[in-house]
Image (cartoon, rainbow, N blue to C red):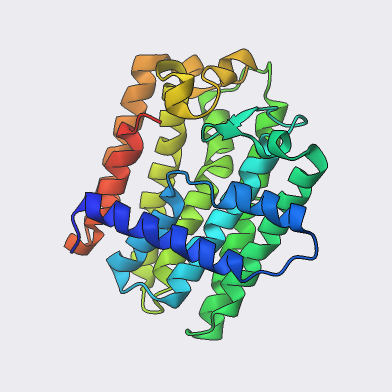
Length: 295
């Protein structure tokens, strides 16, 4: 089994190569649209969600061609969501991963279309690799669709936009981020396990509990970093949530209590993996990374 630093490097390289190879094989009738899609999909990033796909697959079986397609599909959805979140009508951000956001690098209309195209590309890639039972693949498509749409990530973004200048309760804030951030993280973990074709219901239930904990921890840590990190380190505007008067875990709980919340969620994640052996260590290490990361 690879050491964690080797795991992250290996699978970050693997998803980056997969995205480049798959995207190069796409034929677009409009090069500018293609360039805008490539700009946001292949410009780096932490690749946390694809690594969760691979770590979950390795915890329950072996990664395969479908695992690669799944990781790529998840990153397509993530890239599309970032393009749209950054738009003037949404968060109106100028920087993403230290580079101009898509609508700044291209234009607003092209950015919208690039996001639309990446969203549909995800389902194209996830459906074309047919190496497991059709009912499992259909289940995977269903999970990704629900996590991405009006009962998942999009719902979370809608609540987020409606929450500007509003005072949310801790329960409301938790619900919002469980949808906006947590839904796709949970989908990444469940889809990684399903891609092996041999994961059990017991494993999937435990992984779902783990995923819900780290999905929320990811957002809590984001809120902490929005206060404690600088723009250069973050790769996006520091303090943007405060400037936009958005509710955060830090504004609601205070910095120290938010940090305690992240640590508690980390413990919940580890407890959920108690029935797994050493093959789930990458999931354990990713949970630690999520609450200790500095960008």
